[in-house]
Amino acid sequence: MMGEKGKVYLVGAGPGDPFLLTLRAKALLDECDVLLYDNLTNPEIREWTRKDCEHVNVGKSPGKHSIEQDEISEILVDKANENLMVVRLKGGDPFVFARCAEEMSVLDRAGIKYEIVPGVTAALACAAYAGVPLSHREFGSSISFLTGHEDLKKESLRVDFAKFAEVGGTLCIYMGMSKLEEIVDRLLQGGLSPEKPTIVVSNGTLPTQRKIMCSLGELVAKTREEGLAAPAVIFIGNAIGLATKANWFEDRPLFGRRFVVTRSTAQNGEMKNKLQNLGADVLELPLIRILPTEDKKLVAEVFAGIATYEWGVFTSANGAREFLRIFFKAFKDIRSFGPMRIACVGEATASIFRKHNLEVELVPETATAENLATALVATDSLDSANVLVVSGNRNREVMVNMLETMGHAIVDILPVYGTDFAEVINSPGLERYKKEGADGIIFSSSSTALSFIEQEEDLILESEARVPIHCSFGPETSKTLRENELPVDLELEHPGIEEMIESLVQRFG
Ligand code: SAH
Image (tube, rainbow, N blue to C red; front, side, top):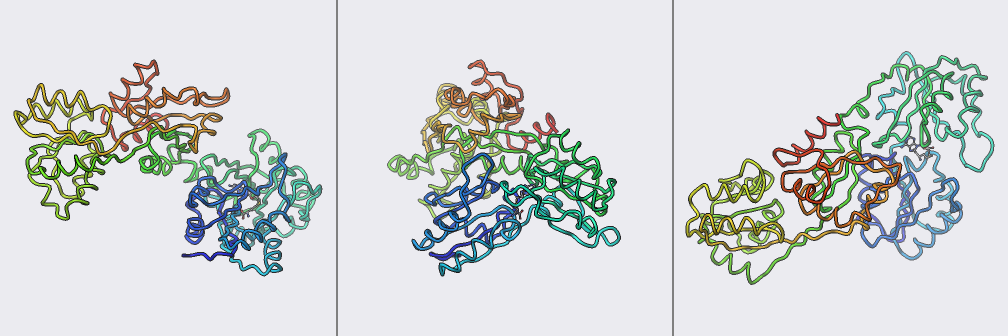
């Protein structure tokens, strides 16, 4: 246990990119019983909590009935008094324009223990992710954090901006967008030159980050023209004049593009990470679920005769993984695998065996079950041979049929998992998908395509949404799409995650 019951953790969530959370914050989120969060905290981070963790949105946003500060403090006290472990998650750093002091004093008065976990504050994160230097030996020796408004309801500015015009150095202005004109006026009145280099970074560290560079004099017109909105940090000063238009974050090849991944939650990880590393915004819309289906009796029979099989045929990475899992549950020693030769539908499946130093003797050129069967038949080794086909519950009949009728093999089938359609209405990414759409939707199998078709009514895009192209992993998936009158806009010659990423970069990069 990292955290304690009956205690409140005031935790900084950083500016948006989940990777900018501290390890301490992550550990506390993993454990907590209750989570109170602000609107600016990334929903993905909130998913890290336990399934039974209670989530309370205490965000203040314009237009919505806002929970008063007193009410938030009260919830913190009540939940801690119920002997729960409470995380109060705040965007950025809890001590920077985040009313942490108020919450601390209420907790003090109530005699409740608390801890504070710092976070990366927006100004520092935006500067880093937009390539904006905040200090320089010659051009900037001080950095100020200022706030435009502290409370949406408060009319006037709290900060005397005219005085900060004299302070110089680099000014980092939070919450400045709704009073931008007034702020610029005061700075100019205070004597700051209209030529001062100015940069605005909105949605910093997120796939929707935008940056504009101009002079202070152009700032108001330029933000309007570009339609830049909150949350944003405004940087003003000579040091930031050294920033260039280029920056590592926005220049990544898939930055600004949005893709939908459709496999089961457990399988989407690798593709999602790779896309995100290239800058893409990734929506998860799991269309299938993988359920292990272990028929104990059948498994026992197959394992008892495992030495009698000449070929083990694996039609998916899932099947291979699941097979090895139950194999190692039954046997401690890899030698029990026996002389069975291994044939795999594609490289992803084969790599699972290679990790165990098991040689894979056959992988067809293109990863389809039919090609796998054809290649096996061509080895001329099937006649009266015992063959074990390890697979899921779909798309195996044709292959088994070919092995039996063309190769004259004696086939045993061992289903180790089942593929089920996952209900899309439960998907974390559905709301954004319908509202914003995407540049591409990636179908990794016929099952994902079929599930999409079956649930099309729940997937209708709103009129403003981007209409995604259909990206298919291979010929079988494409066939399913076309048979159902859906276009195939991109198809891989050799199915694989790397190949898909490469094609997307080629198309969109
Ligand atoms: N405690 C937070 C600040 C909360 S005030 C922190 O330390 O960052 C909210 C303001 O933070 C916004 O109005 C905006 O100025 C800034 N901000 C928060 N997240 C941001 C982001 N992703 N990009 C740009 N500015 C952001």
